[in-house]
Length: 182
Image (cartoon, rainbow, N blue to C red; front, top):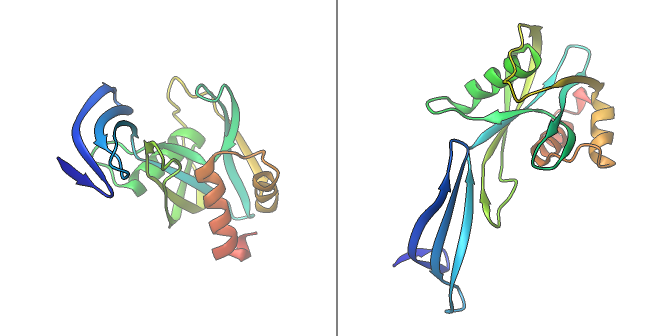
């Protein structure tokens, strides 16, 4: 039996796995002493990039996301590939999705968007001093490039138009830590 915080894991097994997701089921002794089971979805760790150009405009993506069944507006986001650092992944995703390169990068920290049953850390970045390159989105990505002033992006967070949690946190951190960009 393995101690896990106030829980005890009696047995753990993977019930599903693909390159992006692994579902783990644990037979446990709960903190109250009762037996039970707990499932955890492990998502590939990822990045979210907020790109801000020299005019102070924010470059976001708008695309249909299968899981939520609708279009969302968010920062450039994607998974960290094996052997890549989070910043290398962030730069790769920015180039692939929007055809932009950043000469100045600021790490804004990490977020855990889902803590109850999903393990998926996301590293947040601010990319500045932008230049254009050739975009090469994946075959599943039909991305619209959205460019708005920072103040408008922040208003979209306030009014719920932007619902992607890592994007919301990244924009708020930029507003709090770099008010000159707002």
